[in-house]
Image 1 (cartoon, one colour):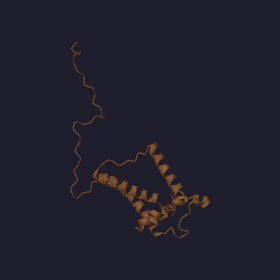
Image 2 (cartoon, one colour):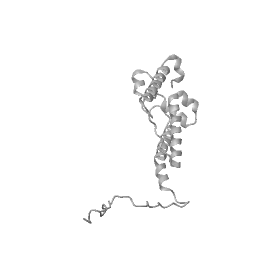
Image 3 (tube, rainbow, N blue to C red):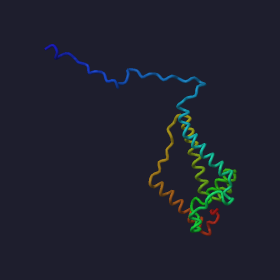
Image 4 (tube, rainbow, N blue to C red):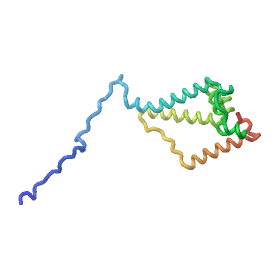
Length: 166
């Protein structure tokens, strides 16, 4: 009967956590922090790709025929789509001519500024170790964007909206 009161410990699992977690080494002041470099890789590469695209469009003028394809909607129907004039806008923007860029495609210029703001936020958070910013577009957001693009298309194709046409 003496075996009834004895306590039997369960065998320790090989997956159990140790009593004290190991302390990670602290990098010196001159050593790069691998985590920071890893966090900066995605926004840095995205920014580099956008800069290369703008450099190409800024160098190769879309106003000269033969460099870029013509908008198929405009070619078939004569209707300016929301993207018509976007390359001319990017070219003017890359050249530093904001007025011409707005005249070519104001919606695209608004997109450039939204992209720039997002990139600044992403880079600051990646550098400081904050969470990655996320754009969560709900159904209502998509509807608002679609309606704004539709209004932009309708207005720029009407005589009173000729200022919005490229």
